[in-house]
Image 1 (tube, helix red, strand yellow):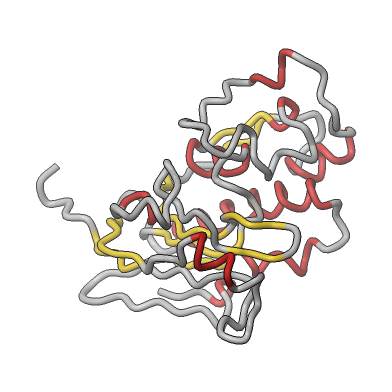
Image 2 (cartoon, rainbow, N blue to C red):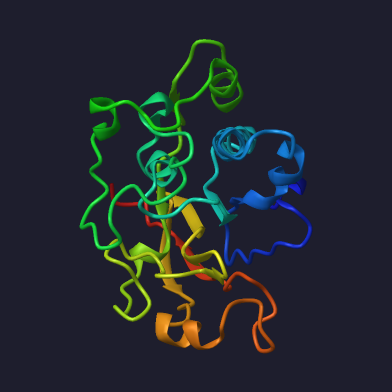
Length: 233
């Protein structure tokens, strides 16, 4: 099943019997242009996950695949929100909620409310919180999906993967070198193989993207997913 909201230029191949929801993060971007960058990022993620869950329910709770540019790095609070299903927005600086929350070689994502111990450099206004969470007086976000990122589910090389198993970089330009693109899936699906991205040393030689050889400022991600065997619980 490939719903219209996922975008006409995306693609998915489902082999054998079974259906799944496929969603593209970019489809919501144009609807949120008037929001501030931080509010827009949180709002987009919230609406994206809510819509995916709703479509899945309408089709009998079928599996979900979500992909695209999520505008957040693997060390960010937004990444943790997708992975853990919850986030208290007020505990994170407005400007840093999508960016690195720890040094590049940080071994884990266990930030554990560390921002709560000191004043935030860029706190949220009431209006920004309302736009981000969708409700007045609410700071805690939750989503009902149990999502896993596809790339960490398939072993890869240290030349192309970070310590979490995500690509070291999916985008490269004058102001950024890192990962903001992902393919997430629900527990009914299992990643079989993925398309590896370019090693950092090769990427740096391009001088930035797009280039003559690479026509986009983002590298392509691709993943083969299989339906999990649920016959033996």
